[in-house]
Length: 505
Image (tube, rainbow, N blue to C red):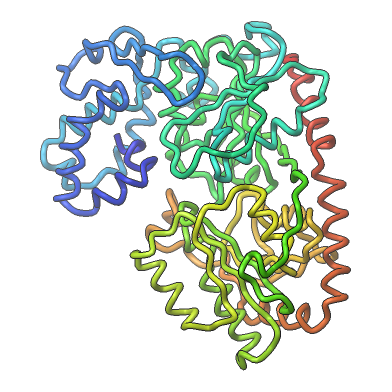
């Protein structure tokens, strides 16, 4: 129950679990809606579980899957206890049989799972999914499961995995999983590679940990059964939360897109955690004049992009605006800052804070809309420098794509991007670690992230704007590094080598 609340931005917005009213209202919503939306029976009496067969469909090509919760679910007791310790005390004290029963049901998974006693009884694994034991079934190959049509970072994640596998001498296909995805579903993708079932031995999940239990309910037990399940998850803080023990129990291996993520996962995982970089590849596109994009023709332009769905405080557009205005206080220099946002609520406090910082500066252009892929690339190409004063990144696709296009990047020298933003090909910004603010990121209690030095970022901005030739030289080095080390061919080779080692292809 708590995981469903955490996984749903609409529920987190509607129900404040720090208040008694929010707790009561969420419990009422869950009692009415959980069966309809998740196939969870919240009114059955104590016993083995619900007496009704729930059914869920998902917005992909797979057929509707019936979930026989009464007969086929077992308890993930340790994970339920772990999460229940974080529930509001008022609910625990008020006689919360409904809360506990529905939380318990939401963490129950199907009977094909069994406890793996490897020193910790909380560890759960799929029966027979050890490739080396020879019990994995299916055709040799890998199914890429993810948001293949979604215009968001995890959608690009699965599309880039497909690009890396294109041309490899292994069988593979894409299963479009569209469960509860915000934003548009119009990304260009090769649908000839779509498959309607997970016929291959390996399931490669491009579905993050906080969504995996929902994926289990949506896809059904047979989807995971007798397959080698790999989580190719993004994560953007230095430590892996305890709440992920249950999702981790669903996979046999984790692939980490960056060394930063690998370090976080390795702290808690009882399965192999393999560093597996993402590839960076862009389609061809027609160059557009700046004026057609509403940009200054002759200014040195800095670009900052962010998605309001990706936690605004983490992306830190406010720091980029302050650094720009500090670097060029007179408003007479031939410079500009382009802020490309998407999914912004223009009535929100965060959006108003952004506008207040800009304070009508005509050099700062704000674009708040979802662009198609080629339009975004044209915007990247039209600007001179990419800026990312993030507090933390799992991988850092924005800087990576700017580097692919030969743009210098001014970037916080922290987290996943440090795999490719090096002192010789990027303008690295110093930082100090600070606590993650309340509600600034999910599962962030006790965690830290970067506070980039805005004066240092301003210095980089002034240096590049005053010496465009130096900016171009840095951009050339950036382009060469990304295209050499993160190409589809190189990353595809890493994928194939790992899958062959496991005997899956």
